[in-house]
Length: 171
Image (cartoon, rainbow, N blue to C red):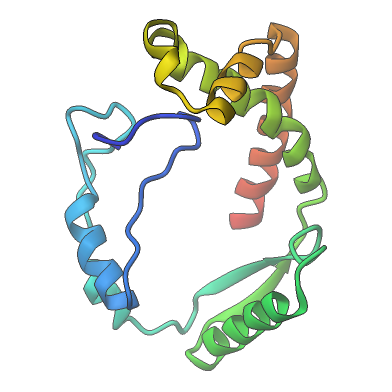
């Protein structure tokens, strides 16, 4: 994440955009791995993402959440997701329905977590150069500083519940 301005540090994710999956694999190969300027990176060896594109998908399981995931999707988006699931099936993967009954708590947890981390990320810069912020972002940073410790702690508790469910679903 070196070079990217932080906003929601525990969820910020920098990734490539490209015309093809192969191009994404090439760019990700360069971006991935250890960065001495980013304490969230890992020194683990980076696999070949291009080689992984050639891998057989037989035996791979793809979790499809039964709760929340398809709620309120536009029909075209839902159809595209179902088409992708079918395409992975044709390549040998197995779609498995997974239950994440508390995934809807993400909306309740997101607000305080994002706001508190936004306030922390922008605190010093906003104090020194707040006049350079656009009106929308300035209001967002000001509002973010009003999250209480109790709200943040509760949101972290909800995050732990959701994370436990996701990890269990991946096992």
